[in-house]
Image (cartoon, rainbow, N blue to C red; front, top):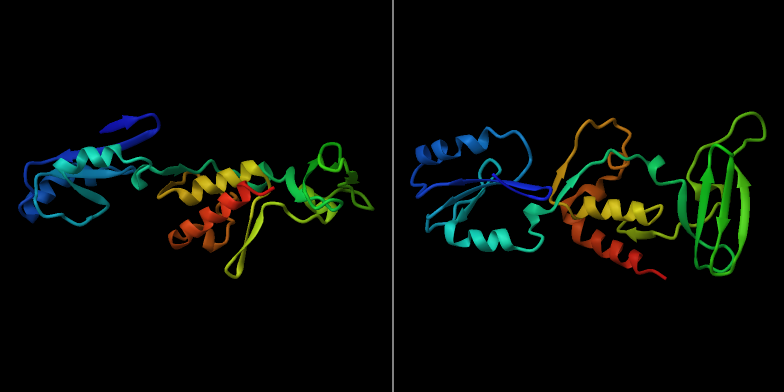
Length: 218
């Protein structure tokens, strides 16, 4: 096993993997490992062996290149923090209704107050979370002003969006990861609630381009 910072991978070395019996014997220890970290079999085989049961075969003389590869796909791991929309939507970036530049909305459910402010035009507006009768409504900060999200873009027939920079970074880490780990899910995490297109590997490159554009939006 090799460990560096929060990255881990398992290595099994053999001289030659000449038949099914040898492969089964050499890889028994890797197959017994019950986690999602990369499992790599290294040998001197001249012929490249395809991935089998999640085990990746590397020729010994290519191992160094593999380990040195910058941000190799297998090393790009995401660990779900089980965050929900409530961890993000108390502060939401919006399009300022007054000057159309980036503005911010915040909400404090304890004081039942919501606020919109723009540092470009100094426009400020306040609202309340209280209903006309008893009680109050809890929703994302921008909804109290019917404001347009700043971090939003069309994707095919769907809409990609993030409430704020922290939310966008979280989505970027998830979408870019080729190894995604989940633990103790509740059914209410923000990742579990995402539409299918966020999860599909075929959309990774296009979604990361959208995220990059949103990060540079002015």
